[in-house]
Every structure is written in structure tokens, then in C-alpha cells.
Image (cartoon, rainbow, N blue to C red; front, side, top):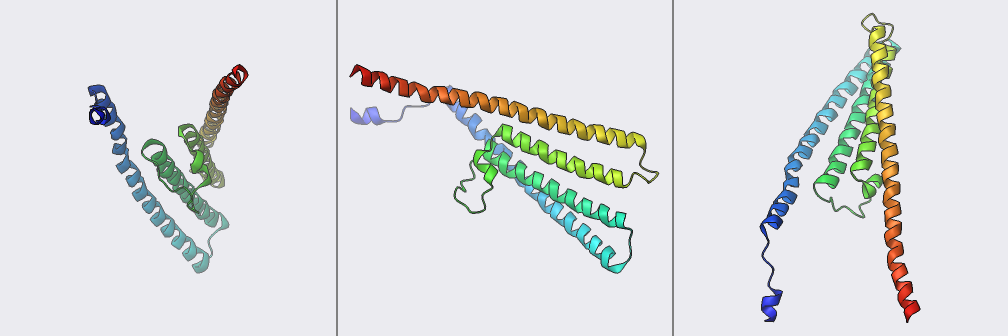
Length: 202
């Protein structure tokens, strides 16, 4: 009798479907592995640009604007690489599986409280930084005939659009976080109230 009661209950069809749907999250794993390959490509691109900078800096007398544009290109590659890291680590942690690196000395501080909303805000901020670097490159090249006033205006408007979008995401995340804190505080108060009633009844 005890053995029959302890036997596992067979899963229903809906439970099997739900389990399969839950397992489907692993389909995203190759996407994050592909982004690691993209990260390697960006490292190679950085090294090529760095070698070009060293060659120009020590082997010739290039204009200062040329050196500045190459350095900004290197900064751009680093910022895109940082964006990839956030997507790879944060996205995998949020949508696929836990990384199980708690206590690791190199664990990013933001990873302990990452969720879909936090990840969106951080990605938006990274995109603003990348857009700002591109805009600075355009401003440095503004004196060249290839850069038109129309292009300058549109690039500036696009950058401002990114800024406004990031601010909107941050405000929405703050509002949602406030709502979650209120709900959590309400839940925390309920058991205490019940316990106090029991003590009073005793």
C-alpha cells in the first residue's frame, strides 16, 4: 500500500507538452555559441586595426585626425564586444539556463540581479555608447566633402532616438520594480499578520 502511494504519478498530456516546451529553451544555445564566434571575429578585427595604428604611429607621420579615427574605431570594436558579452552571458542566464558560477571571483556584479528588463536597459545603454562613438567619428570627418549636413542631422536624430528609448526603458523598469516591491511587501506582511492573530488568540 505504501509502495503504491509513493509511486510517481504518471504525467498528463498537458504536463508532457509543458515539459517539452520548457526544454525548447535549449534551442537558443547554438545562438549564444554563434555569438562567441562573432566575439572571436571582433577580437581579430581589433588586432588588425591595432597593428595598423602601430604601423602608422611609429612608421610615418599621419594627421592627428587619422590617429583619432583609428582609436575611435578600436573603442567602437571594444564596445560592440562588451555588448556581445552582455547578450551572451545575460541572455543565456535569463532565457536558457543558470550559469552556476556563484562565488566565482570574476562573476560580474550585474549578473546576480539580471533579468529581461535589466538586460534590455543595459543593452540600450551599450547601444547609446556605440552610437555616440559613431557620431563622434562623423563629427571629426565633418569637414570632408563626403559628409553632408543631411547625414549629420540624421545621425544626430538617430542617436537622440536611442537616448530617448533607453530612458523610456529605464523608467518602465523602475515602475515595474516599484510594483514588484509593493507586492513583495504585501506578501511579507500577510504571514506576520496571521502569526500575530494566532498569538493573540492563544
